[in-house]
Image 1 (cartoon, rainbow, N blue to C red):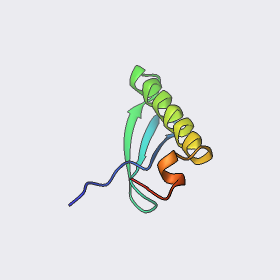
Image 2 (image 1 turned 45 degrees about the vertical axis):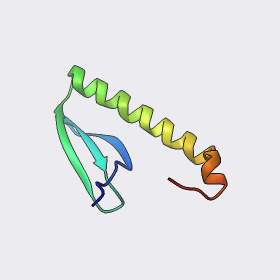
Image 3 (image 1 turned 180 degrees about the vertical axis):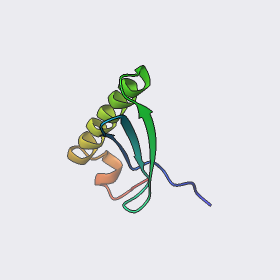
Image 4 (image 1 turned 120 degrees about the vertical axis):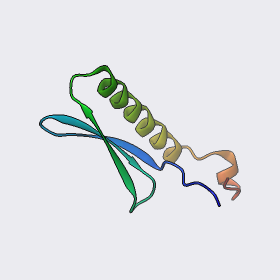
Length: 72
């Protein structure tokens, strides 16, 4: 049995905390609350930004294997 991979992550900010949300697919996500103003919250925000940029780059520049019909 294969483990599901992380599809995307995002940061959701509320009045008192930051939620680091990990999306496994369209229906399943996990929220991890982190106190605002902490180094961890800042680092997770940067991670979410990097993953968003990476996913955007993949969407606009598919890999050579994907172009040939070989998806991994």
